[in-house]
Image (cartoon, rainbow, N blue to C red; front, side, top):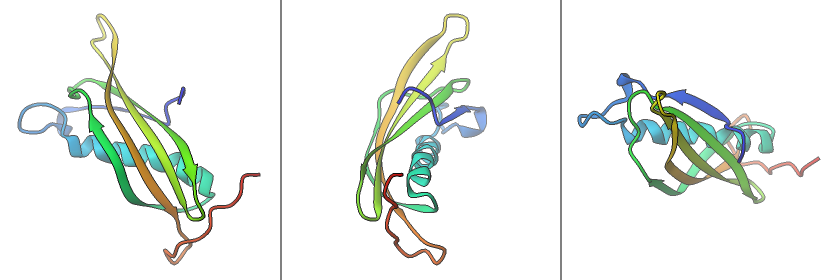
Length: 123
């Protein structure tokens, strides 16, 4: 997981009542990032069927630039398991990178009607 699949800034529009970035917004970015390698591996549409793990390690602050890394770690007949890592770049005056979240999600390949389909074998 050396190249981010998604980079997104945390803005005031994403804050909760405490002034930190809302965890649900981070979760949605994790799902989007995880779907990118899943779609590539499935060579088509996938749907999220499970979040096996999601751990918030540190808060995300307004102004942080999130880098989301995602990697396929297992492939079944119709399912694809993806690990996602989220790092926040913060403090431009003295830059630092902080791990803020880790997750594992499971996607299922589906056809045009939304029915499960086999994941193609690697080429």
